[in-house]
Image (cartoon, rainbow, N blue to C red; front, side, top):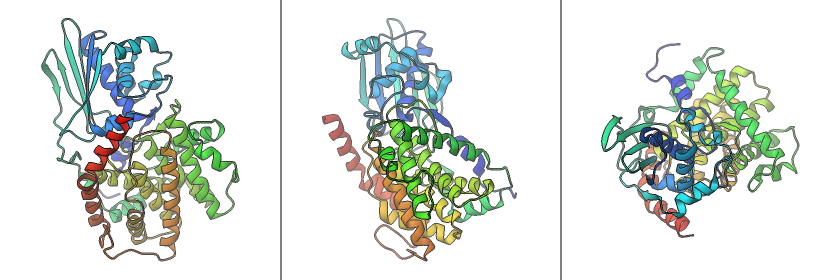
Amino acid sequence: MEKRKFDYIAVLKRELKPVMGCTEPAAAALAGAMARELLGGNPEEIVVFASRDVIKNVMGVGIPHSRATGLAAAVLLGVLYGNPEEGLNILSKIENPNETLISAYSEGNRITVNLATHVPSFHVQVQLSDATNSASVTIAGEHDRVVEKTKNGEVIFKDVLEFQENGTTANPIRDWTVQEIVRFIDECKEGDLSFLIDMAHTNLHIAEHGLETPYGLQVGRSIHLNSPDAPTSLEEAFAHAALLAASASDARMAGCAFPVVINSGSGNQGVTAMVPPLVLASYLEKDPHTLAKALALSNLVAIHLAQFKGRLSALCGAFTAAIGTCCAFVYLMGGTPSQIEDAIQIMIANLTGVVCDGAKKTCALKIHSCVQSAAMTARLVMREGTLRETVGIVAEDPGTTLKHLETLCHEGLEATDHTILSIMVGK
């Protein structure tokens, strides 16, 4: 394969990784555990500074092996019991935490959570202090990217993170094009992308577990009661893909400790981008290499779009991940690169405006709706449905449309994000 400007496989391996438990509380716990390690013991006081979207995404999600929810609880679990070497799997490795000790910190006002401003959309800083020492760790930009460590006021590690005023970080992934991504996957040799199949089956495993066990609203499980176990038509395959993706979210958002391969820092985006293409490829009886290419396309498009929406923002991540899924659907059905671009345009025209009101059990509803929309769009595109004119925020080409989406998300919906958090905190 010719040398390309971007190492797509390296990006896939960096962005797709197995994690147990929701990634926002895991990152907060990781920062807490690393800060405790610097301090040298349990602190007397804890101060947390986090971005708006981190606070929003931690508020209602389940934590493995714990009854606790919220940012303070996640940080406390990391500080008191976390092993930094576990990375983003830190919370799933904490079993039988002393809930009384956790409550003592909270009820004794020994931990405070503050809103950080003028920071990337993902930002959490944990400051610890005891009678003689202090330490802090900041994770920002990505869920496991440590950008600063301090001990007794002295900076002992610093990683400069460039970000825009709207909270997005500078990244050459923004310069990708769909045409180039498709050329890349079509030039891949047998085995180049096979690691993606194992990752997709990891996400399928938690989805199937969610069908067997009642979690959350049981979105996937309830729909599955009236549908066949194995699809016998294209419509049934699309329906099965949507309910399985929802089922995985049902389990994950309730605190299930099964691993999920994340995309752009999100488990929900990972299951949305991987499980549906796996289901459709199975129904269409595609060979493993074709499946792997479809999974690469889905995940690379989702990663690309996340650079415009932001890793965390006012818009639901299932929206952009489902656009990747739709591209994979079109690819598996024999669509052209031009038709894949049409799919992106139609999906943005349809789903822009699906807001994120935090990680919680109702995420499964949005994932199901977004995957259903991906199926509808794929059918439209394969029947020569196109959207190549300027309509609403949609421009004549996907690249310009994405810039419009970015403007809408970070300028138009900035107040919406503030309002969402205000409502959530007010409850």
